[in-house]
Image (cartoon, rainbow, N blue to C red; front, side):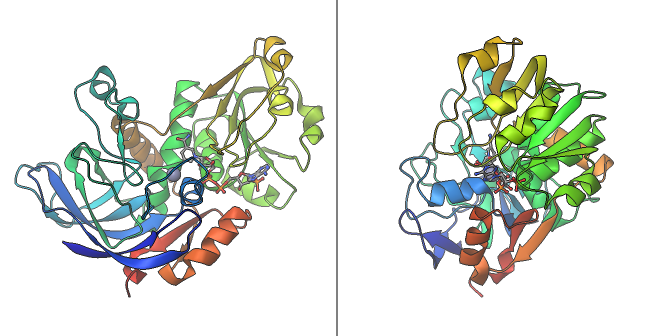
Length: 347
Ligand code: NAP
Ligand code: ZN
C-alpha cells in the first residue's frame, strides 16, 4: 500500500514530500489511518543527526494516533474503526526475559523502533509523519474514549516516558517532586505527578511558564535562568525528573535532592551530562535513567490518563508548517506539543 509521507534525505533536513510503501498485511498486522503525529524532541535530535548516524531518508514520528482501517486474519484485539495509538516500538523478539515481562524496550535481540530502525527482516522502519502505517497488533494500543486523538498522540512517547519513572521511583503521593524543563514531556510529568498525589514544583528557564505550570497542577515554581538560582531549594525534593533536551551540568539539580533522593534523567541530548562526585556522595544521592516504557505499562498509563482527565496540550500544525515547527521546537516556543494533522500530508 502506498502512503504519502514527509522525509528528510540527509541529516539536517529539509523535509520533502515522499511516498512510502507500507507492507501487505501479515496475519497479526493492523493498518492504521493516522490522524495525528506528535513532534517529539527526539525527532529533532535524530533528524539533525545528534544521536549519531541515522538511517536516511528518514520519516520520523513515534507519537501516533489514528483509526484502524484493516486488520490481518489473526488479529483479535482490534477491529476496523477502533481508535488506536502507536509509540516508539513496533517489534521485539517476544521471547526474551524482558519481552516476557512486558519491557520490550530492553529486548535482548534489540527492540525495533518505529522509525530510524531496522526490523528483523532487514527492512527500514518509517514513522508517523505519514498518512498510514502497518504495525503488529501487540505494539498497537487501544485509546480510551475519554481522550481525543490529538491529545492522545503525545501520550504514546512523552506520556509513557514520564509516567514510567514516576511509578518506578514512587509512590510519589505526598512526596516533593521537581520537574525540570516544562516542554512536551515536562508538562505531562507535572500533570501526572500531581494526579498521583505529589507536591509538584516546576523548574523552568525564566518565569514565562509559571501560570501554566500552576494550571497544570504544580504548587510551586522555580525559575532557573541560571542553575545557581536554585540555591534556595537545596535538600528539598525526593525526586527530580529532568526532561531537558540540552546537556546540563547536574550539580545544582542534584543539590535539590533530599539525602537519599533520586534524579531521574529522561532528557536525551547527544552530548554528555556531568556532575562532580561529591554531588552524589554527599547525601547518598543517585542519578538514574529511564527509557520510554513497555507495552503493558503504556496501556496502564493510558487508563490512568483517562481516569484522571489527562492528555497533552497541543498546537495542531499542518505538513507545510513542519520546518517552522522544528525551529520553534528548537527555540523552546511550543506550548506544549506540536501534533501534525496527518491528513495534510501529501495534500
Ligand atoms: P521539548 O518539548 O523541547 O522540552 C524540553 C524542555 O527543556 C524545554 O521546553 C525547556 O523547558 C527545557 N530546555 C530546553 N533547552 C534547555 C536548556 N538549554 N537549558 C535548560 N532547559 C532547557 O522536548 P521533549 O519532547 O519534551 O523532549 C525532552 C527530551 O527528552 C529530549 O532530549 C528527548 O529526546 C528526550 N526523550 C527521552 C525519552 C526517553 O525514553 N528517555 C523519550 C522521549 C523524549 P523550559 O522552557 O521550561 O526551560
Ligand atoms: Zn518521543
